[in-house]
Every structure is written in structure tokens, then in C-alpha cells.
Image (cartoon, rainbow, N blue to C red):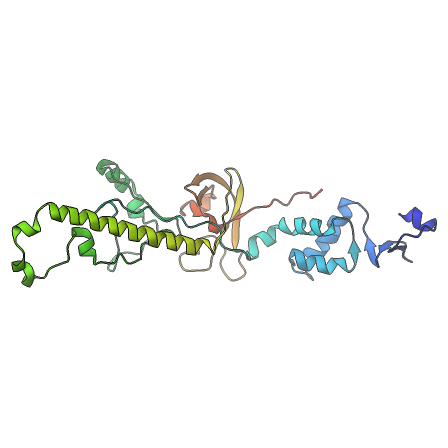
Amino acid sequence: MRSRIKAGDAVEGWNIHSNGGIHFLNKLCNPNDAQVKEEVMKEAHHSRFTVHPGETKMYHDLKHQYWWQGMKRDISKFVSKCLTCQQVKVEHQKPAGLLQPLPIAEWQWDHVTMDFVTGLPRTPQNRDPRFTSQFWQSLQKALGTEIRLSSAFHPQTDGFQSSIGMAPYEALYGRPCRSPMCWMEYGEATLIGPELVQETTDKIRVIRDRLLAAQSRQKSYADHRRRPLEFRIGDHVFLRVTPRKGVFRFGKRGKLAPRYVGPFEILQKIGEVAYKLALLPQLSGIHDVFHVSMLRKYEPDTTMY
């Protein structure tokens, strides 16, 4: 291009500046040299005067002074691999992971929920060690039962809060609860018989239908504000640290601490939206399975070209 301009060929938009640089539309044209491009982008991104701008702002800052082919693509790739940006900046996207509600029980007492109200010691949320201990695991194995735990720090998974259209007593026993003053109204034949069994079966069917409808409605509402995201075993991800109560055990504290820590390798996929991570030894006291909404893919900061 320089030789063509010197030879007098009319090349629209191109000219040689007084300082010897080639300009295109009054912008300095960078040579097709990976190292030169890298240095320009580092100065525009890592400098104390720029403070890690996003890809759009960085492109608008540079396009008034520099030009090279594929400039916008290179800037986007450069910013996406910045380690500081990956750990600190907020994601301006819908939360990841579609809702995966717990299955609805088939019959009475198939699903038992325990509420701890008062007078109990403080325990970690969601995954109480009383239920994950060796004793409880052995007990569940002996009884042939199973404890289904929700994802850590993700209470939306366990969302059975919709009305079933009747009192819990009626849903459990198939008839309304009667006070002591009402016992004389019923004889033994009324309380015991095939009609009671059929009535209980019918009510359980109605309850399941209502719960399924409510669960479907909740999932549709939740998924409208979420996006699907999947990782593969062996991928490396960052783990989100939110400054809320109960999630302050990941090293640094304070407003200027990174929003994400890591990266950590994915060891196993648990269900549809949870992953087991290879945490550091100093984080061994933390449950190593996390919902996908708490993860961000790690982009290694390698040579671009």
C-alpha cells in the first residue's frame, strides 16, 4: 500500500502522514503484526487511565485513532479473555439454568418435608450435615428411602408453595377434619369402608393434577427469565461469590473483592443444571456441587494469534 501511494496511484481514503505512518480515513493503519495489535489493545484496556473498559467502549475509543482489518473482532476476543474482567464484571444476561423442580409424590407419605422452627443450632442452608452424615445415609439405605437435596444456595428448586385447594388434613386422610363435637354424626360404617378408600384415591389424583399444573406454571414463568447453559466435564469455570449472608467463605471480603473466584475444573455433571467442581484444599469445607447460575465459563488468556 505504501508503494502504491508513493507511486501516485489514487487510493481513496489512504495517505501517508507527515510522520511516515500510513493513514486510512485519518486513522493510523496498524501493520498486520500480532504483537503491535496486542500492545495497542493492552494500552487501551489494562492502562490505569482506561480501567478495563468493555468491548463496545474500547472499540469506540480506538476506532477514532486506529484501523486494521478485523479490529472489532480482535477487541471482542481480547476483552473476553481478560482475567480481571472475568472475575470482577457483572454478567448483563438472564440467569443461567432452566428451572428443574423436584418430582411430585405419587402417594401419601412418599414425600416428607421437615421444617425447623426454633430452638435449634445454626446450620448451613440447604444441605444440613444432619442429613448428609454417615449415620443418616446408612439409615436411609436400611429403610429403603432417599433424601433428595436441593442445589446449594438455590432454594428455587424446592418450590412446593402452591395451594392444593383443601386443608392438609383432608388431603392426607381423604375427609375434612372433624372436631370432638362432630364424632356423633358418623358411624363406624361411614368412617371405614371402600368409599373412604375411593374418596382418598380421587382426592390424591386431584391434588397431583393441581400440583402438576402449578409446577408447570411456575416453571414456565421462571424459564421466561432464564437461559439454558451447559458445560462439559473438563471445562474450567469461575464460581460466583455473592455478598449475601451465608456466602462469605470464599477468601477475600469487601466491596472490591472479585465477584468470581477460580477457575475450577468441572469433574461431574449432577442432574440437568448442577456441576461438581474441583475446589482448592482451603475450600474443602464447602459443598462442591453448584447450580449453573453460579458459574461462568473461563476463557484462558492465551496468545490471540
